[in-house]
Image (tube, rainbow, N blue to C red; front, side, top):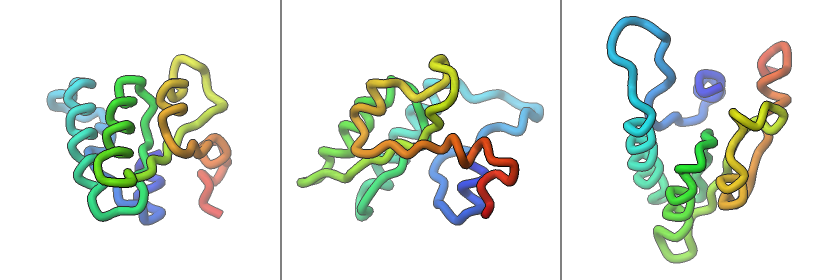
Length: 115
């Protein structure tokens, strides 16, 4: 999904998923720290942050982005809703975000949404 968004011109912050090649793999908590730093830095001077994630541990990050400056920065959560609960964005994270965009159709379309 991130590669697709990158091809469509979205600015991707953080690392793209590993291609599975040799070398050490990132630990999940390390990725959360990098994501938090990138998201907080990106929230300065922008009208909105779009977060493509789903882990409940990111609720405090969404809260921090929204209150970081007076008036806050709205956060949109982009996720797929028509997937098993075990991998869907947490209900707490969706509730904290200002908007939730369902990417199911984009992800499941035969052409990958490149209409």
